[in-house]
Amino acid sequence: MRTLILALTCASFVGCRGFTVSTRNVVQMEGPVETRVELPPRLDGGPVQPFTVPSGHTAGGGSVVILDVDGILLNTDYTGMMTAGENPVSLFREKLDTIANDACVKAVVLRINSPGGGVAAVELMRRDLVRFHQKTGIPMVACLMDVGAGGAYYLATAADRIVATPGTVTGGVGIILNLYNLRDLLGQFNIVPQEVKAGPFVDLGTPARALTVEGKKILQDMADEYHQHIRNEIRQARSSINLADGTTLDGRVFTAAQAQTRGLIDVIGDLDQAIELARQAAGAPGAAAILYHRKNDPARTVYASTPNTPLQTTFLPSIPGLDRSRLPTFLCMWQPEMAMEKLSGK
Image (cartoon, rainbow, N blue to C red; front, side, top):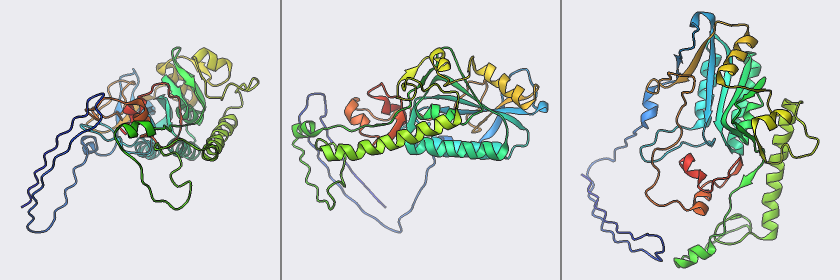
């Protein structure tokens, strides 16, 4: 038998300079320690499976798979209280593998609604997508919805054509590393770092102090390298991009009309038009629209998405600097919102 009594009192309101914690533990153990694993609710739905959405077509003419990519793309489980999220990188690979083994698939529509994500995550996803495209040889059309920026746009460039809605925000091809100097804030709570380290840069980027000139250069060189690599890949994938004034891939975002002028996208339209373009490219005018989802997350329209955002992550107020410090990785992402990390479940 195990009994654990924990009493916690915390005063952490805005403006408070301290808090008091009181604990009392009584532990009694008998017998072996048991391990229980409880899977998140979404994983109980089993493997992804096809759902045919109403489109006036029948599966007898093959299928066009709508592959949904939504939210901030990080190679991590989107966990949180009452979470409904999954690891977007793992889920993307699972769907690609399932599609590759479906002989009825004639084309893929890569439906994107994302500001981007971690450089490593989007690189993994794009490489998986490129290999899938090369292996299957099936036509692929990317459709950018509300936002298709940063690493999400980079992912779209693996498709044969890119469609964007008139209201799409796209571009944003840049690299950002969120670092904050929280030394003064920590000092208000009498928190003083006392690290022991071997290697002067092992804690490079710590929020406990300001960056040194040398430290900032190290990180800047890394960001420049990632940015150059992604720009080279995009230029190779889309020879139509207009780079004359040097501003197309400098991190700024564009409307769909501006993006089309610069060669970032091919067509201004909507998701239905993207599906029709995929049917035409595959020579399968009767192909039905299919989405792969968990059985407990059925898809009833072409807009159905796989949630990857926790329903609730914390009861504490959002502090932008602290929130952004929860993503200590290089990001290829359009990030105007200071508390955007809440969407990622970190």
